Image (cartoon, rainbow, N blue to C red):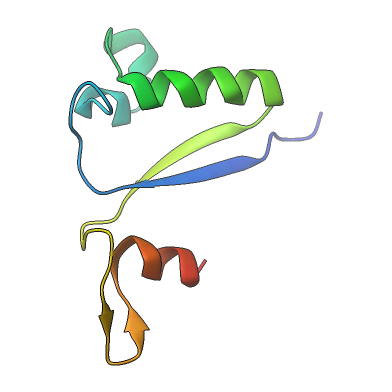
Length: 80
């Protein structure tokens, strides 16, 4: 059986009720009772559309344009 594709989702910070810190831990479904609205939404979509979700933190924020290069989330998207 082929592996499910992985969708990487960037986030800047964890703020409940959107994204709870406990939802980012390994095997969090057994630990985290309130993962957050965004996590629950993406899990439903991933099950219905057959893909896995990986949350990736971007510590530089959403991004700024510095010396012709984007930083943060926009830079991460631009660089794959």
